[in-house]
Length: 206
Image 1 (cartoon, rainbow, N blue to C red):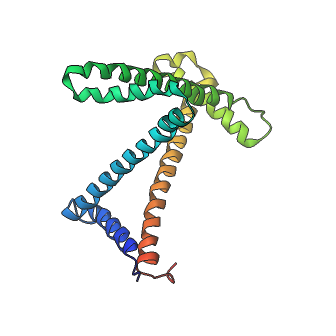
Image 2 (cartoon, rainbow, N blue to C red):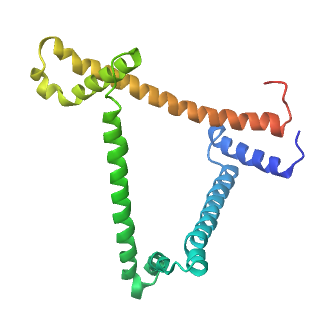
Image 3 (cartoon, helix red, strand yellow):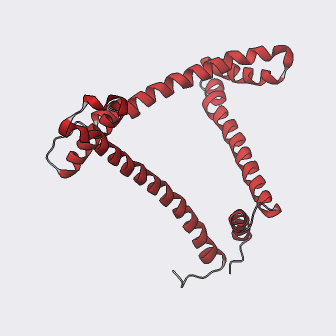
């Protein structure tokens, strides 16, 4: 068994979080939960201060990049929200943040979720994998374009395309769910191995 205080603290917090699944919400779990939230908030504050210093204050003072004073002032204006006489000034910075985030997010979403996805389907049909990708794109799109309201648009052999698209979508959703479940299970296994190997010192079981 480990004698390191750090390992014991990590083991206590791990078991405290596991106690929610084993029993129910309890004081030990709440201690670990509050500690996690507090540490995360403190880490975010320290990281934010360091980012302001390295990206704003130091270049402005040491390198003479005085244009950086504009974003720093806009950042300070966000805190005027808590001062009622000048709380309206925070809307200036907030509007810039929202507009910039929306613009960058829209550009990234269109590029990543539309253009790149569509261009990735333009593949030569010289392998089974490429054939599956192209076929999945066609039948998946047909499922959304030719719903029950428009089933008469596809008659005869083509009527199977929406049904085949539904099966492709079900397989894709199942694979996504399985991938997410594997990620959660890998984290659970990692913490279990930490308890067995690092805390209890039992390394012969695995």
